[in-house]
Length: 502
Image (cartoon, rainbow, N blue to C red; front, side, top):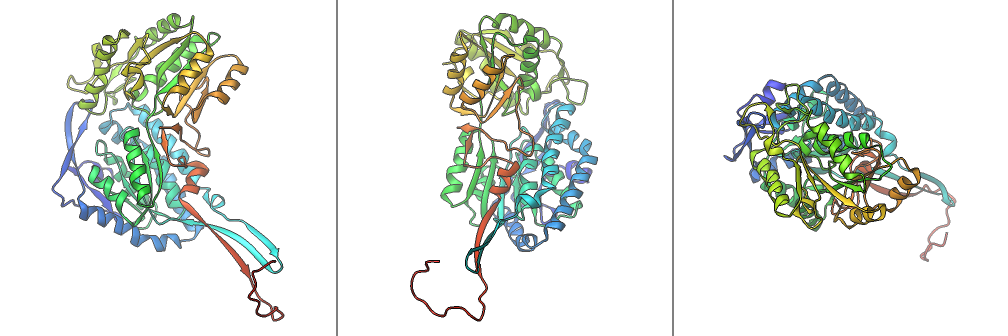
């Protein structure tokens, strides 16, 4: 399967259980970021191909909706077993197209697999309630059923994990899916869809549509698509939410972030330094849950910076297929944009402690490299502080007190993730109550919830009322019917045109 789906000149759509040759005539390049070379093309769908993918999902829906919960569960278990056994294949695809090191790719798949395992026990999450004899001889009960065709738009930074947050939940609940992955690293989506087919999923239940804004708009505007799940930047999340809701769809649109780590003076600074390096530079900082700002309550900043410097000095940046700690950025354009913030920092009077443009790499010279970058004394008015940089750039902001740090975090337009590092239980408890952020870590730098909780932030980090996976995911992908039932016996009271009082 891997050769058929990934070793091709053009990555094309996966519709109705098979690859479908694109006829749009439009493609985009796919790179190996560690080599800096184009390795293949990806098809960009036109209106006819968008319609075909949606039509396939629509045609498959009635039969899948009526498939027993037991059968759906068996297919999900089979998918889980295949994914666990062959995760190494998928990790190689992620590294080749995204650039993250193999160990990081394996971690991404593991977190996605956790959601699949949670979903395997789905029947009790979509069961209804029953109340007998609410009035004489009358029972009321509820059912939860699927919506129909749902569209999913996933980002480049987690080409396996984010789709695995969404489509297993939607499919287990009885929906059919059209998934549009990022055109930067498209092959993982095809691989996952083919694996699900191998597990016994009927044709048309999970379709992969490759493309750009044309494909996105096709999903947002189609009357046959009942809901949209999205992860990406805040401006696009807002666009997706506004467009899809205007068209009457349910939407969960997860946007950007600017995550802060508050460090109190009593914290273990060795633990903090390890956490800051891991959370700031893992996956080259291309994570919506990356820590990008360390808020240091003085007098700890100087000592903490020295500890971070010593750790960064031992990191190896290079090809993710080698024994490296951090890989390249996903494209040359993105690498150059991230690097431009170092010049902005200098112009704004910040101190560049570690300049990632000077990094020595274990990899090809044309790779899209930028090493870990540490910037001290960052002004909160600088774009280095306000923008979601989405790269290996870690800022230090110095504050005088806990209160000043919390006010700084709460003033951010984002509210995705945050963390506090302290040995004071009272301060930690106060922080979790006062901070206006959806996911909070206490001495945990990247507090992504486990699969049976739900993922999502506050403010401009989410549009819509539903978070991803967990119980929220099943509520999003189902709708409730309430049925009031009376079975008449021969002694019923006859006709009465008055308003019922009992």
